[in-house]
Amino acid sequence: MNAISRDPEFLREEWALYGVGTLVLLTRFATRIKTVGFKGFQGDDYMSILVLALFTVDAATVHIVYYSGTNVEGSVLQQIRPLTATEIDMFTHGSKEQLVAWYSYTALIWAMKGTMLFFFNRLTFGLDQHRYIKWLAIGCGLSYVAVFLTITLGCFPTRKNWQVVPDPGKVCTLKLQNFLVTVVLNVITDAAILAIPVPLLWRLKVPLRRKLVVALLLCSGLFVICAAIVRVALTLGAHPSAKNINRWGVRETIVGIVAINLPILRPLFNKTFWSKGTFKSSSPSHGTSCNPDIHGNYEMSASFAPKARGGTSTCNEGASSVPGKNRSHSKESLGSLAGSEEFIIEPRKRVTVETTFQITSEDLEKVDSEQGWGIGGVGVGASKASVEAQAVDDQIMQSGKC
Image (cartoon, rainbow, N blue to C red; front, side, top):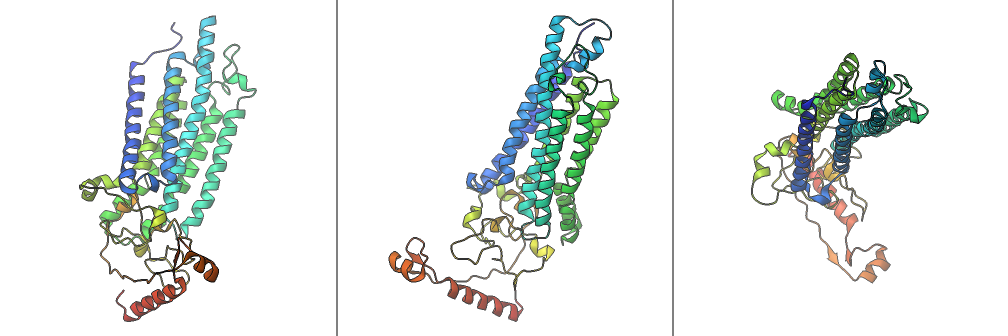
């Protein structure tokens, strides 16, 4: 009897899915580079790099386990006949790789959650959901710690994770506790993340067809939840083997990678994206929340109509009024979704109000001594400019034209 059953389709499927996932991630990077440039990369972009690295590690370990087998197969085989020394060594090595696969798989799943949290963190800037995301990020971090400790301490002492003879038991071979803790916390956190865009979609004042498209993009976490549940059900319900466990693990991760990158790949279906020339948004730290360039204003805040803080809501609400301090998140707020996600909502026609500020150049030492702040030898009359801007805004509001 062969120690390990072979399935030629397994490796072909695994590497085909790996190729699809890698292509999706590389396309995401290319899209973001064209829209915001390297300097415009945000937290979700860097998390996607980590996702690609973990995805590669997971694929490599699964490939090794396919040829080596694990103590899961060893526990079944030794009930039929004694294992040879070569088989024991092979199963021991495969079991160690399988333990690495558990760490890389769970880290990959939670890295994808981090990607979505960073994405929604930018998408909801200035809204009530922004604080909820902060707490949810803490919850996701604690849930990953729980999963990590389960994998580490679920089978103790640690050497039993790769012990073959004598049979260490299902706690250290099949590792049922890893499945249960991972799927429960995975589904709970995914459902919590999925709850972020639901209130936004409910208040979104756009045609039903467009709202359904946005819902499909932002609520793609439903597919990840379904994949996680299906994976556990089919893995535990079938004949136990490392091959079957890893097969469904790879399928689950590819569903997650495709789902979380759908919103970022939305610009690929916009004609402007494929036009000649560089299609790039200015860096978030160097722009204002209003950007009347060729991109148009892609906003959700006007549709949501959130309550203004501290007076009349203007298009520059995301910018800081403190001299010398620009809020780097202004471009990423819902007032103007910078980067790829700005194409989730089509541009709206609006009235653009231009305010001219007078800037006077003075000697650097004179500025420093008289005002206490100087930027490159240029003194900016911030107080006067703020008063003039407020006066313009008040006139516009009174006239009822904006």
